Length: 113
Image 1 (cartoon, rainbow, N blue to C red):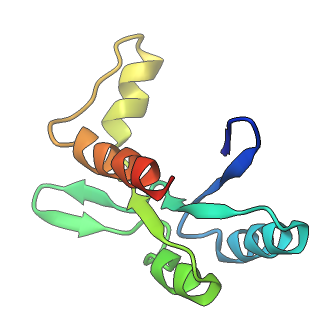
Image 2 (cartoon, rainbow, N blue to C red):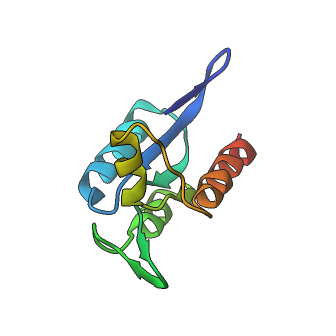
Image 3 (cartoon, rainbow, N blue to C red):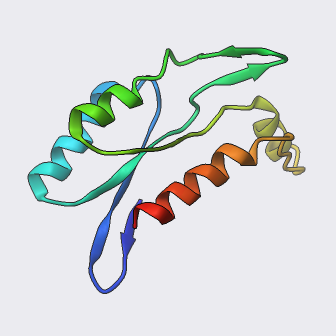
């Protein structure tokens, strides 16, 4: 995701817990090309079933990678299978509380700028 005005402000890297190597490669490429990184968002970070939180793609490593490269973590977006089911049925569904981590991430991106 590139944030562009009259010039390239920077990129937001979107990753997943299982994409550790790809995320590092992307961050190294940005460093090599001298493209500013505004931060990292981790998509499909966790899955909540009742009161239990699962990490179907492995535990989050985004905090560790962000610290390694000196960039902020802008947010962690949850995975919810009800959303995919709703989209497939033509009836998009957003569970209660789902937008909060997305809203927090968007606010973090705006504040980074």
